[in-house]
Image 1 (cartoon, one colour):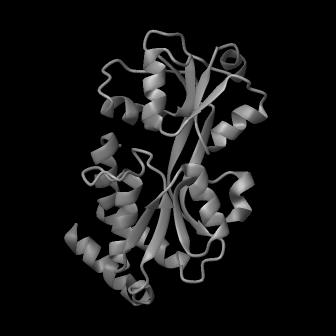
Image 2 (cartoon, helix red, strand yellow):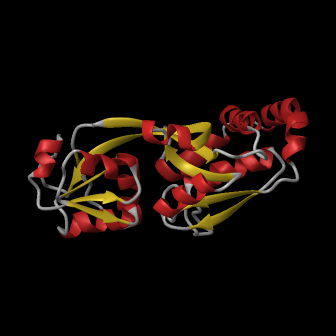
Length: 241
């Protein structure tokens, strides 16, 4: 693996020199498993982006704010990174889309032993549905006429609400809910309904980003894919693919 990485790094070293002195700032939220202030578990996306930065001989500084504030700050600013950001139509013109990182599956989840929720019509009949603030699926519920939505600032808080019976279901991504359940110490698994969406999650940036060269970051991501670094980080959070 080291020889592969060295060979690939040699191919992009000339490109990387232009980024070597330009530290970037990423605006993110406290949202495990993707990003966290925890030094032991900084988050899957932060670890991936940090490895990309190493390839480019630069570094990334992190500013933690709420997820809605992160999006607004990056839209209004310049040369700011943001991730993971679902690439949906109403965001398309607002960001510079740099690199797809992975995809996610959006579902309704209920507490262990409860019946699955497979549709919007079923979810509307529940007393309360939890959703993460600032996400496309939060907007989707409101757009589709839900009046029983309760927003939360983190996925672990959503899982706690499901397990305590505070909400009847959550509308979120299965991979985030599974991770939050495990780190929360819950042994019983959540009940998932049918997958309603699959969305691509991206490393993105401010539309005005003259100091960011997208191709450099794409090449760096290719290094991680080819030398096994991406799969290693993924397995450390979610298990082997």
